[in-house]
Length: 436
Ligand code: URA
Ligand code: CA
Image (cartoon, rainbow, N blue to C red; front, side, top):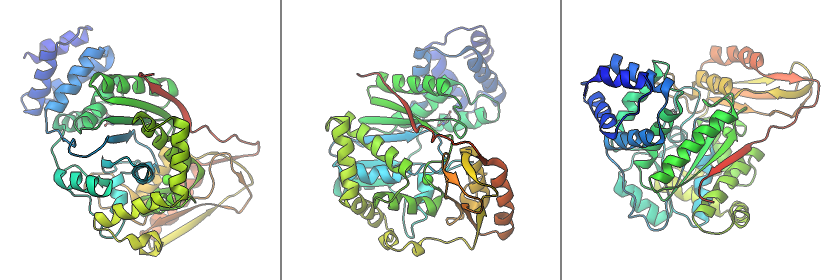
């Protein structure tokens, strides 16, 4: 492989062969292709794009750089869900038990959070005793025995993506649709499943800021999934504001439990039920409307909550937390933030709330940062809500008193309250389904 020739080829709009793509991925992982040449190549791809075929070749080359996980020993159809970087997005914790209660086995491999977005594994670890470190054999066994398991990945999947993503992050080449699509789909396709539902976040808190570019990404994700033989669908959902009311690890687990008890915030409950119904529909269990009813019914009957308790117990956690929230880690300091004027809540930017929660201790700046499980933000109001002067808008939780005090000003600096009535934003914007 001649790296300069490849860079020049893409720079002038050429199309790579499968051989060329395999070769630069392999040489980069092996350390034979230096960062500066890979950076130039990524920048050329950023400007010239890649064809569908090139994107598929890249996806396959990244999958082939590491191990793959075979879950076919799990009985029944296996569904997977992926959401692209939400703030306060607790849906994995509600969706898993809902689907499992509807009879679909859930074996979900999740990740940790970085920056302004949270990770499902971190949230689960706020439950005392809960272990996310399971072998593939344990995952399969638990899925078959209990119908639900949520764990981390012990296998070395897609090492090429880890290295490429880190480089893209420092060279301004993250926001290229073929590169994002190959990155996300290589990780999803390396883990076997029958059905894949992608929740592509749109808006201020997401890395696709507008609906048109999010749609373009969603189309490409679905196209790749289907071309690799996986039943794939994408939803475009709004991330103009955090999902639900809680942003933080223990805070979000409590919110998920409340949702499974039928007392959850409207948007979180609605999205959880919606995603569950879509997945059940894709699994051939019935129509969307039937499945929507079924999803609501397992919340109402307490079956979904029971599945959550089974999940917790089977992974070493203390399921008494479900009835006693004081058993969760608590932050030492809290601060209520009150409205300085009356009106309607008009801005609650998700990204800023995510960063604020991170700075309170709920998230990481670097991958080895230690989390404060009790920290975060509990919102009382969302966009469109009426606010009276002096109403509590939110409560901040953290273990560093000074930071908790300081963040009040930060919170008040980015929210907006206006006099005119504000419409509640639409949560589910559209869907991408190539198989209708
Ligand atoms: N998330 C990913 O996994 N990869 C990207 O390239 C961007 C977001
Ligand atoms: Ca939430």
